[in-house]
Amino acid sequence: MGFMATLITTHKNTDFDGVASVTAALLLYPDASPLIPKPLNPNVKAFLSLHKDVFPWSEKPAPSVEDASRLVVVDTAEWHRIPNAKALQKKKDLEVLVWDHHASSEPIQSDWQCIEPVGANITLMMRYLKEKGIELTPIQATLFLAGLYEDTGHLTFTNTTAEDAHAVGDLLAKGADLKILSKFLRPAYGEKQKDILFEMLQSARRQKINGHRISISKLPIEGHVSGLALVVNMYRDIMNVDAAFGIFCLPDNERCMVIGRSDVESLNIGDIMRSMGGGGHPGAGSAMLKQVNPDTVIEMISSLVEGNQQASVQISDLMSFPVVTVEPTATMEEAAKIMRSKGCTGLPVTEGDRLVGMISRRDFQKVRGENRMKSPVKAYMRYPVETIHPGVSPLQAARIMIRQDIGRLPIVEEGRLIGIVTRSDVMCYFYDLLPD
Ligand SMILES: [Mn+2]
Image (cartoon, rainbow, N blue to C red; front, top):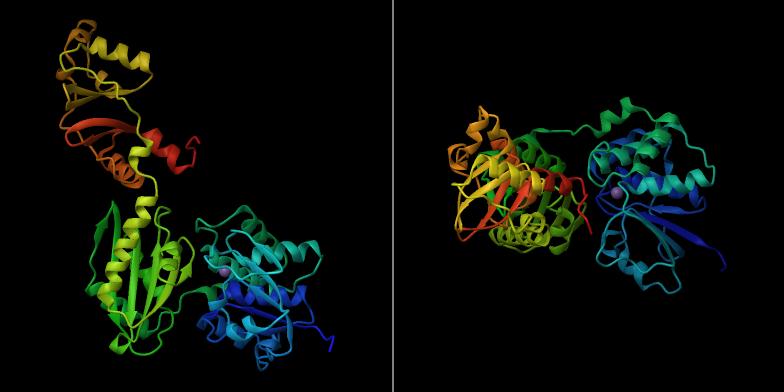
């Protein structure tokens, strides 16, 4: 027919970034029709319902997939997350364009794509809108900002880039309304959500996996409950754990919804959920499992957390070795000399293979008078010594240093001192200053 019909679509359980991206795509491809998946997230649904007149396309019946010759996919790059995927995949000569910011294991084969790991997909689309000089209305800017804030946790999630922050500036300049935004972004806790949170907290258990504090909670639910991601987020906050998982099962375990939230970079929820057939970001994600025993899901998550952790950095990767040590019978003067020549501010004190104490610059303040410098190290050293084993995470080492207010931690394996890690080693790791 020579008629080019373009469809724009996004992922199911559409969030603000998804709807914002569809809206932006309609500005970039003005003749296109949106194919909006069902269901929408409740807060997105509420926003669109109030703004029906501004976004009339949200009310129109879904366009036919038959006539499509071009497909624009936004905020996802995976077939299984978009509506009518089977019919679309079957179409020959369908030109496919993808805009996304997620890491995907099986991305759609596309003719053109813009896939970059920024905080929100709308940030990528803002780049092109700006280039083309397309103006935004304050309401469009408000919707875009909702997407950006939701996906980046108001620019606090670790996926946030400088470009996301610049896009926020542009959107505020275009009149994005923060008052409206806070109404729709504010978590809507209903009675149902409160009940679920309460039940989760009552049966809450904390566990430690490779130094990470985790809490996994399973709960039967009846039918669809919205806002479970918010509940899990709240649960993580209250439990004060590094990562929390909620397993919500329908009767007879016909389906289980797994939702995860992580507050630490070393536990990537997106990776864990992808291993279970779902998806998400480093900080948040979900997966839907069919016909599973929730206890099996708990085991699955535990072993994935363990695997996820092993792939990340262990303290043995940061430690210095061999370790410069001093004997307990050495004089304070000798210890000072070693510290000066090695440029360190503290030394483990060892007797053969055995760690018997620590001596640091701080301990020298107790040495009064020149002749006291002839006293043995054992008179001033601190003991017992806090030690760690090589498998702990940098985060766990940092926690011990903070709690004990110490600047170095000896690493001991089978009673043997094998290395030492300092406060600055840990800081370098957290600020990504690791040399390589
Ligand atoms: Mn997104």
